[in-house]
Length: 632
Figure (cartoon, rainbow, N blue to C red):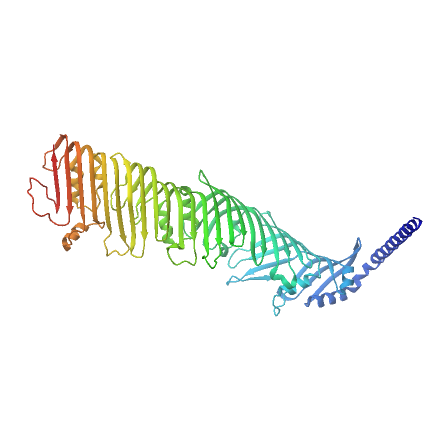
């Protein structure tokens, strides 16, 4: 026990003695340093030569003075010039804190902290889009080597740039000067950190933070994490034309934040939060659109299969309407069993307010923009699914599916117009299907029928097919309820891209419990003037117990007359049959038949004369048309 006590007593005496010795040596080191550091001014030439050899470029120092802070000496150089010519670097003053112990161990100069003040540099763009750094001395005959740069950075533990200025000079555009630029760079063998802050011309600050994990010998395998904060400024005044290209913004007040993670040579994850109180602009020469209170939150995540982008959420004010949606984009990389696929889904897309935005800002071909502008799509899409396969060459290159909620669009170049279409739609580039269950439905088969059809309720199944020859629209099932009665039918429409070929329609419509006043509603525009006039005026009113109409043939205007002249038999025909009660009919010199208890009425139209001939008393003949009627 006594030996243990004597051991600890000796250890304590030796420890206290070593501490006292260390304090004496430290005090001596600091005292000698404070005494001799001012003499560094007499060695300005030696300092210049050593710095010139280290940088391997011309260097001059106006004056140098020494100081002391804590345990480290401080060198302050004024009027420093590095390099020569137009790219010479001029600094008001440079503050250097040497790392004495690291320098002794490495047997070369190591700097703990290098501070530069008053740095002025410019980034200038040439006509080819290449940027050149001006204001920093560079060796023209030396290529950029990241590994060499990282090794040189090990000489400086911390680099600070204060009260500096950076000027951006886009080609043929207004320069942008960023003032009060300050950055702080900390370097290590495998970890680095950069913090930067600058001020925009309007006085708003921009901040940047970058953390990296890089080794000089393996810099390609490095990792990084970045953060960027942008203020609420009007960026339309500073964005160069080369960046905005054909987009024109008269106002672009926006700000936000960006978080990014880099690894394995690509972006691994990112997050964006953007807020734009005011934005007004357009693409090319289109009419500008105004967007207010835009809010966007985006998350990006890469995985083994590809990557995932989530927009949660995207919202904006379009006039008096608040538009909002949630979207997700997934990319699946190509494998041995499947091609590369891009998958997009959205919970809700309100088409009515967003269509003008797409028309004004989306960079689509001019012909597509004209189509979007003329269609004027309205309504809402729900549960939208879209798949895109870049390597596919068939119709499966693009496929889609969605639920429709009161969707509407105008007629354009032979395509029908519709209003209040509700149901589901699916398809690809070559074919598709629409299952409809709509109320207050409107359909306009322009130019087949002159006016749109209005219905209280509509249920239908429509399929279409698009190939190199034309477009085919088929409705194998169609059931509607309108003011004219209960209607069921089907149709087939074939539209050819080759205008030398006739477009074709096969339409069958059945009616029960109807009203005869709506007969003219279903008369195609391709009928001859005389027949069309007769059909519109022959039936004045009455209850239709049963009705049937069928049209088979060309949809081209004047097709009947052309067919007759070319003697093409049997290509176009129209048939109609009606069983009605309490009916009033009249035409021309015919006496009006009113208060008929039952009327059976049939019309047959074809492009060839009827055989055998019938007597005028039994039939009214009009340009190869036949009409038969009877009353009870």
